[in-house]
Length: 324
Image (cartoon, rainbow, N blue to C red; front, side, top):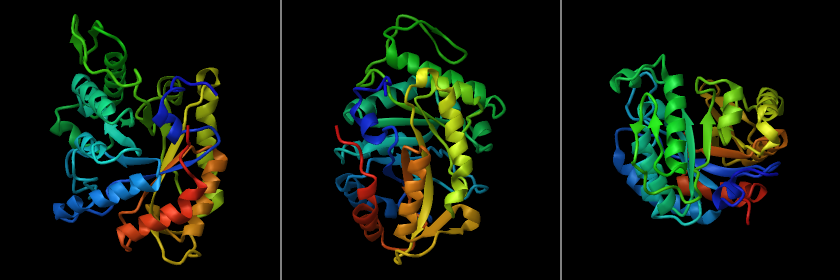
């Protein structure tokens, strides 16, 4: 199936029609006022890279909001990915997601193109409009206008990445006779829109290179019906039947008992399961059209290396990254 990333090694490794691949969401532990724990994670990140997981994902949470009680992976996401790029060789480096309205397109285009070049084209650019109200006045941005800002920033970045010396006159970017250097390695960076991002599904299907959504309940196979319908609605709107991947994620507590049944924790925010239940869920996702699943393990109670090893040896063989 044709798409504009036919020659993009990382895109085709992570995303393929009819197949699901597996990635890992950072952080690997929950931040508890001790940043030193994250300095110990490099060995696990290298383990993820060497084990054959398709991707690593980071989130963009610039400020700590007590209402959300979540600081993400603590470090700035793009700075962190640049560091990880220099310590890994194969794993795709994904953002899920950068809050576009809080960034200027020129600086974001420069940073993402730089990471893409330095990582040999391994960047996957997940983007969103943001849902943490308190961050917007802190940046002197309008929460109510974030959908409009999202479109402008995304379109400006794509212009800067793909056109030499563009003439730009958006509400954010005004320039002539200037050029962004470097450009991305493959002319474009795969850009996946997260959720609705205050846009219509038609706009996402036309303008995004892929779609990231939350899975909803994951306790039983029947829970996937709504997700299946969303994916079908998205694909029905994609122009010319071009392949555009769908990605989702789940935070898990992987139990040592492989037969432990899928059990929702924290109001369904975390899924406790043995590996057989996880494999069953991933197979179901693959069946309904999910192309990539990012697994978060920070709420688990087991040793990080042990959990990653079980995922790599017992789960990953069913969902290996595509080889070219």
